[in-house]
Length: 342
Ligand code: ADE
Ligand code: ZN
Image (cartoon, rainbow, N blue to C red; front, side):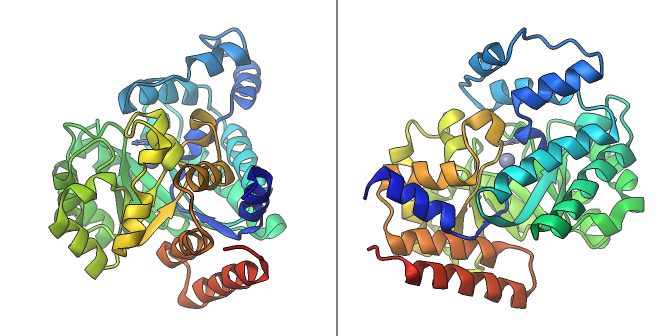
Protein backbone atom coordinates (compact mmCIF):
# COMPACT_ATOMS: atom_id res chain seq x y z
CA UNK A 1 0.00 0.00 0.00
CA UNK A 2 1.20 3.54 -0.79
CA UNK A 3 2.13 5.54 2.33
CA UNK A 4 -0.34 8.27 1.42
CA UNK A 5 -3.16 5.71 1.12
CA UNK A 6 -2.30 4.23 4.51
CA UNK A 7 -2.29 7.69 6.09
CA UNK A 8 -5.68 8.46 4.56
CA UNK A 9 -7.14 5.21 5.82
CA UNK A 10 -5.83 5.80 9.34
CA UNK A 11 -7.09 9.39 9.34
CA UNK A 12 -10.61 8.14 8.62
CA UNK A 13 -10.77 5.55 11.41
CA UNK A 14 -12.88 6.74 14.38
CA UNK A 15 -10.42 6.40 17.26
CA UNK A 16 -10.29 6.30 21.06
CA UNK A 17 -7.25 7.48 23.01
CA UNK A 18 -6.88 5.72 26.37
CA UNK A 19 -3.26 6.41 27.30
CA UNK A 20 -2.33 10.06 27.20
CA UNK A 21 -0.61 12.21 29.82
CA UNK A 22 -1.93 15.70 29.31
CA UNK A 23 1.41 17.16 30.47
CA UNK A 24 3.01 15.06 27.72
CA UNK A 25 1.01 16.88 25.07
CA UNK A 26 2.75 20.17 25.91
CA UNK A 27 4.17 21.32 22.55
CA UNK A 28 7.28 23.54 22.69
CA UNK A 29 5.47 26.41 20.92
CA UNK A 30 2.79 26.56 23.62
CA UNK A 31 5.41 26.03 26.34
CA UNK A 32 7.25 29.13 25.15
CA UNK A 33 4.04 31.14 24.96
CA UNK A 34 2.91 30.21 28.48
CA UNK A 35 6.42 30.63 29.95
CA UNK A 36 6.52 34.14 28.50
CA UNK A 37 3.17 35.24 29.87
CA UNK A 38 4.05 33.76 33.30
CA UNK A 39 7.49 35.43 33.29
CA UNK A 40 9.30 32.12 33.63
CA UNK A 41 12.67 31.63 31.98
CA UNK A 42 13.06 28.35 30.10
CA UNK A 43 16.41 26.57 29.95
CA UNK A 44 16.19 26.73 26.17
CA UNK A 45 16.50 29.75 23.90
CA UNK A 46 14.46 28.44 20.99
CA UNK A 47 11.91 25.85 19.96
CA UNK A 48 14.63 24.14 17.92
CA UNK A 49 16.87 23.80 20.97
CA UNK A 50 14.00 22.27 22.95
CA UNK A 51 13.33 19.77 20.22
CA UNK A 52 17.03 18.89 20.08
CA UNK A 53 16.96 18.05 23.79
CA UNK A 54 14.24 15.45 23.19
CA UNK A 55 16.57 12.48 22.83
CA UNK A 56 16.14 9.87 25.52
CA UNK A 57 17.99 6.70 26.46
CA UNK A 58 15.37 5.56 28.97
CA UNK A 59 12.20 6.55 30.84
CA UNK A 60 14.00 8.56 33.54
CA UNK A 61 15.80 10.82 31.06
CA UNK A 62 12.42 11.65 29.54
CA UNK A 63 10.70 12.20 32.90
CA UNK A 64 13.36 14.72 34.00
CA UNK A 65 12.61 16.89 30.97
CA UNK A 66 8.84 16.31 31.13
CA UNK A 67 8.61 17.48 34.76
CA UNK A 68 10.73 20.55 33.97
CA UNK A 69 8.46 21.49 31.08
CA UNK A 70 5.36 21.23 33.27
CA UNK A 71 6.75 23.84 35.67
CA UNK A 72 5.57 26.72 33.51
CA UNK A 73 1.93 25.73 34.09
CA UNK A 74 0.63 27.97 36.85
CA UNK A 75 -2.85 29.32 36.18
CA UNK A 76 -6.16 27.67 35.36
CA UNK A 77 -5.96 29.19 31.88
CA UNK A 78 -2.61 27.43 31.32
CA UNK A 79 -4.17 24.04 32.04
CA UNK A 80 -7.14 24.95 29.86
CA UNK A 81 -4.88 25.98 26.95
CA UNK A 82 -2.78 22.83 27.27
CA UNK A 83 -5.83 20.56 27.25
CA UNK A 84 -7.68 22.48 24.54
CA UNK A 85 -4.63 22.34 22.25
CA UNK A 86 -4.50 18.56 22.68
CA UNK A 87 -8.22 18.13 22.07
CA UNK A 88 -8.34 20.23 18.91
CA UNK A 89 -5.29 18.38 17.59
CA UNK A 90 -6.81 14.93 18.12
CA UNK A 91 -10.17 16.10 16.82
CA UNK A 92 -8.37 16.82 13.54
CA UNK A 93 -7.23 13.16 13.62
CA UNK A 94 -10.76 11.81 14.07
CA UNK A 95 -10.33 10.85 17.73
CA UNK A 96 -13.85 10.74 19.13
CA UNK A 97 -13.25 9.53 22.70
CA UNK A 98 -10.41 10.25 25.15
CA UNK A 99 -9.48 8.95 28.60
CA UNK A 100 -6.63 11.17 29.72
CA UNK A 101 -4.22 11.20 32.66
CA UNK A 102 -3.15 14.17 34.69
CA UNK A 103 -0.39 14.17 37.33
CA UNK A 104 -1.68 16.40 40.17
CA UNK A 105 1.48 16.03 42.27
CA UNK A 106 3.63 17.57 39.52
CA UNK A 107 1.68 20.76 40.13
CA UNK A 108 0.53 20.67 43.76
CA UNK A 109 4.14 20.05 44.90
CA UNK A 110 4.99 23.45 43.31
CA UNK A 111 2.18 25.19 45.17
CA UNK A 112 -0.38 25.13 42.36
CA UNK A 113 -3.83 24.29 43.75
CA UNK A 114 -5.57 21.01 42.87
CA UNK A 115 -8.60 23.14 41.95
CA UNK A 116 -6.56 25.22 39.48
CA UNK A 117 -5.35 22.09 37.67
CA UNK A 118 -8.61 20.20 37.52
CA UNK A 119 -10.78 23.19 36.68
CA UNK A 120 -8.59 24.14 33.72
CA UNK A 121 -8.47 20.59 32.38
CA UNK A 122 -12.18 19.86 32.80
CA UNK A 123 -13.25 23.19 31.31
CA UNK A 124 -11.41 22.22 28.11
CA UNK A 125 -12.81 18.66 28.16
CA UNK A 126 -16.35 19.99 28.57
CA UNK A 127 -15.87 22.50 25.75
CA UNK A 128 -14.57 19.71 23.50
CA UNK A 129 -17.56 17.59 24.43
CA UNK A 130 -19.97 20.39 23.53
CA UNK A 131 -18.25 21.78 20.46
CA UNK A 132 -16.27 18.87 19.01
CA UNK A 133 -18.46 15.96 20.16
CA UNK A 134 -15.52 14.27 21.89
CA UNK A 135 -16.54 12.16 24.89
CA UNK A 136 -14.09 11.89 27.76
CA UNK A 137 -12.99 10.36 31.06
CA UNK A 138 -10.37 11.79 33.40
CA UNK A 139 -7.78 9.73 35.29
CA UNK A 140 -5.73 11.08 38.19
CA UNK A 141 -2.31 9.47 38.26
CA UNK A 142 -0.18 8.98 41.37
CA UNK A 143 3.57 9.50 40.92
CA UNK A 144 5.22 6.24 41.91
CA UNK A 145 8.64 7.77 42.67
CA UNK A 146 6.93 9.54 45.59
CA UNK A 147 5.66 7.80 48.74
CA UNK A 148 2.31 6.15 49.28
CA UNK A 149 1.67 8.74 51.98
CA UNK A 150 1.99 11.49 49.34
CA UNK A 151 -0.45 9.60 47.13
CA UNK A 152 -2.89 9.47 50.05
CA UNK A 153 -2.67 13.28 50.35
CA UNK A 154 -3.49 13.54 46.65
CA UNK A 155 -6.45 11.21 47.05
CA UNK A 156 -7.67 13.42 49.90
CA UNK A 157 -7.27 16.59 47.78
CA UNK A 158 -9.25 14.99 44.96
CA UNK A 159 -12.34 14.23 47.01
CA UNK A 160 -14.12 17.59 46.51
CA UNK A 161 -13.71 16.96 42.74
CA UNK A 162 -14.64 13.29 42.80
CA UNK A 163 -17.52 13.89 40.40
CA UNK A 164 -15.00 15.04 37.76
CA UNK A 165 -12.61 12.08 38.07
CA UNK A 166 -13.29 8.60 36.73
CA UNK A 167 -10.24 6.69 37.78
CA UNK A 168 -6.76 6.66 39.26
CA UNK A 169 -3.52 5.53 37.65
CA UNK A 170 0.12 5.02 38.56
CA UNK A 171 2.95 6.50 36.50
CA UNK A 172 6.50 7.93 36.59
CA UNK A 173 9.73 5.97 37.32
CA UNK A 174 8.78 2.30 37.21
CA UNK A 175 11.96 0.44 38.11
CA UNK A 176 12.31 0.14 41.88
CA UNK A 177 8.77 1.45 42.46
CA UNK A 178 6.58 -1.65 42.19
CA UNK A 179 2.80 -1.57 42.34
CA UNK A 180 2.99 -3.24 45.78
CA UNK A 181 4.17 0.13 47.19
CA UNK A 182 0.67 1.54 46.53
CA UNK A 183 -1.67 -1.24 47.66
CA UNK A 184 -3.35 0.75 50.42
CA UNK A 185 -3.96 3.92 48.44
CA UNK A 186 -5.39 1.94 45.53
CA UNK A 187 -7.75 0.18 47.92
CA UNK A 188 -8.81 3.52 49.37
CA UNK A 189 -9.25 4.93 45.85
CA UNK A 190 -11.49 2.00 44.89
CA UNK A 191 -13.54 2.65 48.03
CA UNK A 192 -14.12 6.18 46.75
CA UNK A 193 -15.53 4.73 43.53
CA UNK A 194 -12.51 5.37 41.31
CA UNK A 195 -11.68 2.84 38.60
CA UNK A 196 -8.10 1.57 38.72
CA UNK A 197 -5.31 1.39 36.15
CA UNK A 198 -1.51 1.34 36.44
CA UNK A 199 1.55 1.58 34.24
CA UNK A 200 3.31 -1.77 34.48
CA UNK A 201 5.76 -3.76 32.39
CA UNK A 202 7.01 -0.74 30.44
CA UNK A 203 10.58 -0.88 31.79
CA UNK A 204 9.70 -3.02 34.79
CA UNK A 205 9.37 -6.83 34.75
CA UNK A 206 6.33 -9.04 34.17
CA UNK A 207 6.13 -9.39 37.98
CA UNK A 208 4.99 -5.79 38.18
CA UNK A 209 2.06 -6.64 35.89
CA UNK A 210 1.11 -9.50 38.22
CA UNK A 211 1.26 -7.07 41.14
CA UNK A 212 -0.88 -4.52 39.32
CA UNK A 213 -3.52 -7.22 38.75
CA UNK A 214 -3.36 -9.13 42.02
CA UNK A 215 -2.48 -6.41 44.52
CA UNK A 216 -3.83 -3.20 43.00
CA UNK A 217 -6.72 -4.90 41.19
CA UNK A 218 -6.46 -2.76 38.07
CA UNK A 219 -8.99 -3.15 35.26
CA UNK A 220 -6.50 -2.13 32.57
CA UNK A 221 -2.70 -2.14 32.28
CA UNK A 222 -0.83 0.78 30.72
CA UNK A 223 1.95 -0.53 28.44
CA UNK A 224 2.32 -4.09 29.71
CA UNK A 225 4.89 -4.90 27.00
CA UNK A 226 6.77 -7.30 29.24
CA UNK A 227 3.80 -9.66 29.66
CA UNK A 228 5.13 -11.70 26.76
CA UNK A 229 7.97 -12.87 29.03
CA UNK A 230 5.44 -14.93 31.01
CA UNK A 231 3.00 -17.36 29.36
CA UNK A 232 0.89 -17.79 32.50
CA UNK A 233 0.47 -14.02 32.67
CA UNK A 234 -0.57 -13.88 29.01
CA UNK A 235 -3.20 -16.55 29.75
CA UNK A 236 -4.49 -14.50 32.66
CA UNK A 237 -4.75 -11.32 30.54
CA UNK A 238 -6.68 -13.22 27.88
CA UNK A 239 -9.01 -15.02 30.30
CA UNK A 240 -9.92 -11.82 32.11
CA UNK A 241 -9.88 -9.69 28.96
CA UNK A 242 -7.56 -7.15 30.59
CA UNK A 243 -6.70 -4.44 28.06
CA UNK A 244 -3.12 -3.32 27.45
CA UNK A 245 -2.79 0.31 26.33
CA UNK A 246 0.34 0.21 24.16
CA UNK A 247 2.29 3.26 23.01
CA UNK A 248 4.53 2.31 20.09
CA UNK A 249 6.29 5.63 19.39
CA UNK A 250 6.91 6.06 23.12
CA UNK A 251 8.46 2.59 23.26
CA UNK A 252 10.88 3.44 20.47
CA UNK A 253 11.77 6.88 21.86
CA UNK A 254 12.36 5.53 25.39
CA UNK A 255 14.30 2.50 24.10
CA UNK A 256 11.83 0.00 25.51
CA UNK A 257 12.34 -1.55 22.07
CA UNK A 258 15.21 -1.02 19.64
CA UNK A 259 13.08 -0.29 16.59
CA UNK A 260 9.43 -0.25 15.59
CA UNK A 261 9.79 -3.54 13.73
CA UNK A 262 10.34 -5.15 17.16
CA UNK A 263 7.06 -3.90 18.59
CA UNK A 264 5.07 -6.73 20.24
CA UNK A 265 1.58 -5.55 19.23
CA UNK A 266 1.08 -8.17 16.48
CA UNK A 267 2.24 -10.99 18.76
CA UNK A 268 -0.26 -9.75 21.32
CA UNK A 269 -3.14 -9.55 18.86
CA UNK A 270 -2.28 -13.03 17.57
CA UNK A 271 -2.45 -14.41 21.10
CA UNK A 272 -5.85 -12.77 21.63
CA UNK A 273 -4.79 -10.03 24.04
CA UNK A 274 -7.01 -6.92 24.05
CA UNK A 275 -4.18 -4.66 22.84
CA UNK A 276 -4.76 -1.03 21.89
CA UNK A 277 -2.58 1.78 20.49
CA UNK A 278 -2.11 5.26 21.98
CA UNK A 279 0.28 8.18 22.11
CA UNK A 280 1.46 8.51 25.77
CA UNK A 281 3.32 11.85 25.47
CA UNK A 282 2.86 12.98 21.87
CA UNK A 283 4.71 16.29 22.13
CA UNK A 284 7.85 14.41 23.21
CA UNK A 285 7.68 11.25 21.13
CA UNK A 286 7.01 12.54 17.63
CA UNK A 287 3.36 11.89 17.13
CA UNK A 288 -0.28 11.71 18.13
CA UNK A 289 -2.72 8.88 17.45
CA UNK A 290 -2.46 8.86 13.66
CA UNK A 291 1.33 8.84 13.71
CA UNK A 292 1.32 5.96 16.21
CA UNK A 293 -1.05 3.95 14.02
CA UNK A 294 0.87 4.85 10.88
CA UNK A 295 4.39 4.04 12.10
CA UNK A 296 3.19 0.77 13.62
CA UNK A 297 1.23 -0.24 10.52
CA UNK A 298 4.17 0.57 8.26
CA UNK A 299 6.83 -1.21 10.31
CA UNK A 300 4.76 -4.30 11.06
CA UNK A 301 2.88 -4.40 7.79
CA UNK A 302 -0.49 -4.44 9.54
CA UNK A 303 -3.36 -5.63 7.38
CA UNK A 304 -6.93 -4.36 7.23
CA UNK A 305 -8.21 -6.75 9.90
CA UNK A 306 -5.42 -5.90 12.33
CA UNK A 307 -6.00 -2.16 11.92
CA UNK A 308 -9.73 -2.64 12.43
CA UNK A 309 -9.13 -4.87 15.47
CA UNK A 310 -6.93 -2.23 17.09
CA UNK A 311 -9.57 0.45 16.59
CA UNK A 312 -12.34 -1.80 17.92
CA UNK A 313 -10.22 -2.89 20.89
CA UNK A 314 -9.78 0.71 22.02
CA UNK A 315 -13.53 1.25 22.28
CA UNK A 316 -13.94 -2.16 23.90
CA UNK A 317 -11.24 -1.28 26.46
CA UNK A 318 -12.74 2.14 27.19
CA UNK A 319 -14.99 3.10 30.09
CA UNK A 320 -17.88 4.06 27.83
CA UNK A 321 -21.28 2.42 28.36
CA UNK A 322 -21.95 -0.83 26.51
CA UNK A 323 -24.31 1.07 24.20
CA UNK A 324 -21.77 3.77 23.36
CA UNK A 325 -19.09 1.12 22.76
CA UNK A 326 -21.37 -0.73 20.35
CA UNK A 327 -22.17 2.46 18.45
CA UNK A 328 -18.51 3.32 18.00
CA UNK A 329 -17.60 -0.25 17.07
CA UNK A 330 -20.33 -0.26 14.41
CA UNK A 331 -18.92 2.99 13.04
CA UNK A 332 -15.46 1.43 12.83
CA UNK A 333 -16.81 -1.67 11.05
CA UNK A 334 -18.87 0.42 8.63
CA UNK A 335 -15.83 2.53 7.87
CA UNK A 336 -13.69 -0.50 7.04
CA UNK A 337 -16.48 -1.99 4.95
CA UNK A 338 -16.41 1.08 2.73
CA UNK A 339 -12.67 0.63 2.08
CA UNK A 340 -11.40 -1.42 -0.77
CA UNK A 341 -8.33 -2.93 0.91
CA UNK A 342 -7.00 -6.25 2.13
N1 ADE B 1 4.56 9.76 32.68
C1 ADE B 1 4.42 10.28 31.47
N2 ADE B 1 4.73 9.37 30.54
C2 ADE B 1 5.10 8.24 31.19
C3 ADE B 1 5.51 6.95 30.79
N3 ADE B 1 5.65 6.61 29.50
N4 ADE B 1 5.81 6.04 31.74
C4 ADE B 1 5.68 6.36 33.02
N5 ADE B 1 5.29 7.56 33.45
C5 ADE B 1 4.99 8.49 32.53
ZN1 ZN C 1 2.11 6.59 30.06
